[in-house]
Image (cartoon, rainbow, N blue to C red; front, side):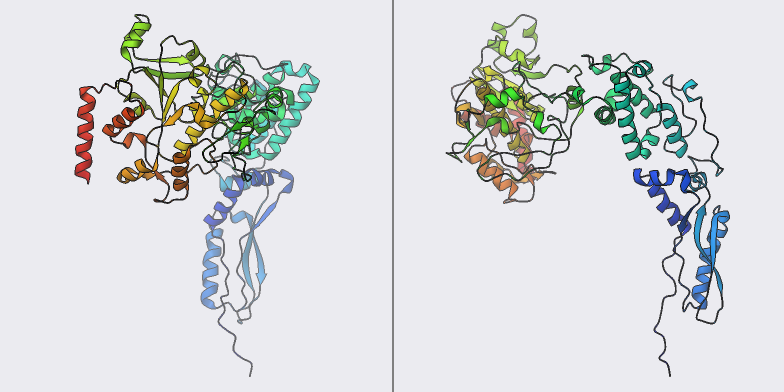
Length: 581
């Protein structure tokens, strides 16, 4: 007697109507999948519905299969269904089972997965040849098909077969390079091209204009006198344009990145941009033993300093941290001054030779009497001014101390202090101050958040100053010679204010060679999670009376005036803290 068959599931997971649509939509909305589905010659295209195996199928299972099959037969896909005869071993005979869907052309497929982009499942119409005569809101381009559709892609390709800026046609070499770069981009990102719609055509209009010129015009982006484009178009689409410029323009048009220390002594990066270092997203490299350096996987990493500067620095070395590494000597220009981040608009502007906005710095005159005596009647109306960074060299107001604050509120809340000015550091933009020689001769107090980024910013400030002095001809320097002190950035401060600690979302874990011993210990404990996970003490959370005590300890020879309202605020905050405890 033959053994009875074990229990067996006759069905496999069958694709439902919605599952099939979702699966194809995901494919359609990716560049690789869109390119595959776009090819008209590949149709008819068949897609399996994962039909069930009928071996040992029971009556109950067959009823389930029939219900699944009817859901497709009652849908708009009915004309495209493929069925096959399958037998069973359960004595139920041959069954006509739904197996796949076959789309005769891409319009039928697109109508199924994105009916809002392809309202009718009809065969493709003959391509139009009159797109260049159309017009839209921008005054020059119009697509008959919705952005993101196969039809939009076809129309865009028709548009860009010829240069959109007529002057380019007379430059055969530039035109050939443009065509090669355009084809490369369109083949890699067909869905993106379609989804951008007329924005891609406008971007190619800018590319063709740039390709027709021997060099980038030295103007601000919003000065670009291009017809039909609003003044913010390039700023809004700079990432797309950056990639298209790289592909379609001559390699020599892509300028090297501005060095961290500019030739004029000013800062090289835009403080208003969230990305203070140009280049792609950073990936930290392993730091060799004895080398205090971090590296970014950055397309501009080899361009940050010009050849003359590198050659000039070969014989000059710097002691980065004489407390932690008494014998460590490193070439300063090998070290990045700022945190590498995703490239921003300022990187795009410099890379392609457009005119950059002047770097600005905000400062407050904490010694009101001295400022009033030295300044004009007009300037005396305000204790805060904004200057181009290089103008700090010519500032006529005497001061012996500079307090640099990472955050704006801390900067604004500093009390009046004799012989002192305050500078708003604005995060990593503080590295812009490094080349200012007047600051090299001044006592500097840096006050930032007590977290990994706060220490990285402090490191960036010191390192940028070291680099600037090295390039100015000084032979050997140590961190302690810089007269850059930190305030309330130590382990004791962190432990005293555990109740105000919050979470630092992304820690900056790297080697920071320009921290002093106590700073380095605190930083190492933060990244080792010695007191908790991703701790962060924001400088604004420290009670104001402690800030005043810290200032008095660091500046014992100066007069610190505490206005009545600040005293009241300090008492109020202390009372609030007492209640919370």
